[in-house]
Image (cartoon, rainbow, N blue to C red; front, top):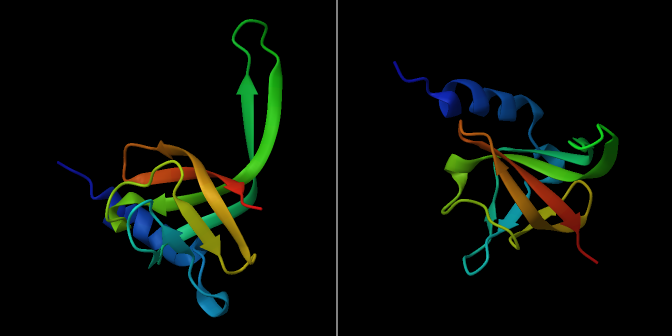
Length: 114
């Protein structure tokens, strides 16, 4: 039996926690393709990532902006160097890394553009 992760899990979660509303939807611009409004995306301005050094067990913490997305909403999978505008923050970001989870969701690790 196959589970519809996108329809049963991701869509309802994005509907509750996603960007949009009065501030407007994020605008995603894939390299070489037209920009589009991204209906389902969860933005976190200070996502905290903990990395553990396998040699000595020390941990380092970093904070960076992240956008959680449903990959099914993209004309092609999100990629490095694509850009995103978040109306709520009034800022633009470039995608530095794409981390898919294997169930139709991806974390886009972002860097604020000057």
